[in-house]
Image (cartoon, rainbow, N blue to C red; front, side, top):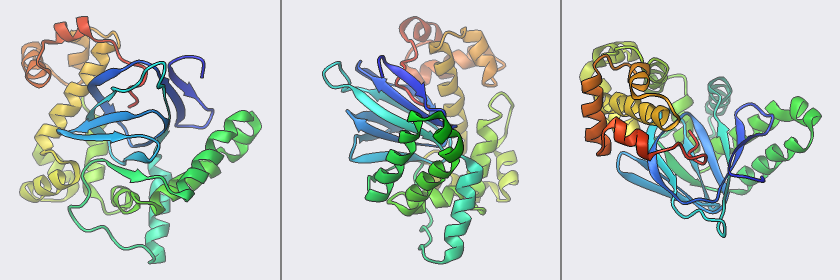
Length: 283
């Protein structure tokens, strides 16, 4: 990779990235993904909990999550190289159903999954990742074998240290994951917690408890963080403050400014003047 940023591999959802500049953690939104670092280190923060990882662990994020992410140790002498793999809902669900039907994997205990987690590289993951990225050397190999190699990597993740955690998110009975998918694709709409609970088929109290178990945040906190993190990214990417507020469902500009400043410690205008979206903030 001759410069910092993201590079498409030709396989849907698979990108390589490089960073040679130290960037403090800033708001981002991770869609369902695996992030594997092959050189250097990366940091992600979810609801105050820091996840620092390098080539010994990969990050598994099976549901859309409002996070802060950065590359605090990257430099020209210590570059960050990594691979971003989007998790396809259909394929992950198919594999999860097949694995659970085999009866060879213990179910995940309720409450043990918390939004994202790190998992140690094992031989299966390393081999599958290498076979996947090697396809980029040939357009024909990529076209013919890309989905099969991606399926192999997904299977390695589902078998690995984060496997039970990921299977909980992609299992057919996970109403919380479906609720998060619904909210994250409709941030511009006004969605009530009662509506989210009804869609999940739960009472408000049960939904609140299960949602916090899965994400570390209450439903209200999650929706607000998703909206404000998306807005912060859009502003850092060059969108005006008014456009960003409207894109994430805020009708009142003053309310948006108040909540933005409360979360980030500065007004949207100040944020716009001081931030540009770093190339290595994958999400």
